[in-house]
Length: 225
Image (tube, rainbow, N blue to C red; front, side, top):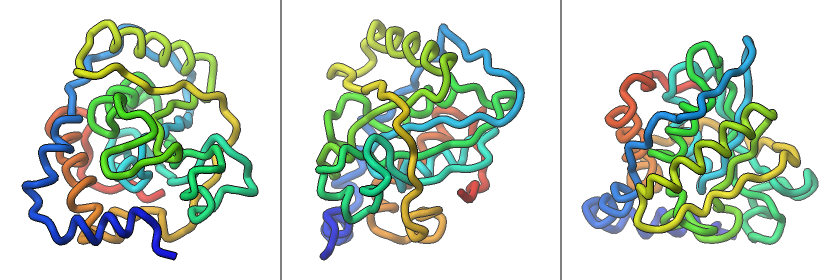
């Protein structure tokens, strides 16, 4: 069975890039520095974000300084349902997500939130990210600690008050039910498949936006999962 994303990629390949670039560009926002900054202990930490197709989320965060690993996977459902074909039905409770390992001495959690809201995803789309539709593409944050929970609450309140988007923010804060890595062929997908139509039209602009909007956080090398 051909999954919807691959059907979309085939359709996109038949269109001129100019037709799709404005849709992606509209989602890019210069998200402000957080008023509530993360104060995490020394040592590597993890963050889990769901923001549509995990290929693009992985591609963006793999270019952030201080990030040592980004794994594509699923959060929100049961381990027994954590397979791409099953999650794609939209009936498992899972969302496509990424697990990010980072060094808070180099990049703070609140700065990862800036990237998440500013260029990695559109926080105003409910159960959708651009061409992908379904609960498995919902916009969500899964705090991994009390400190992350505090920082997320503060940043969401700050962004909602700032009204940077024309539509309301619908990003959910979800409990940590566990993260399950996706199949091997999904890992480092943008690095391995730079000419894939979906990557070129939806994810390359996100990586370019990261470099443009947050130059201090950008690193040129892709961090393998």
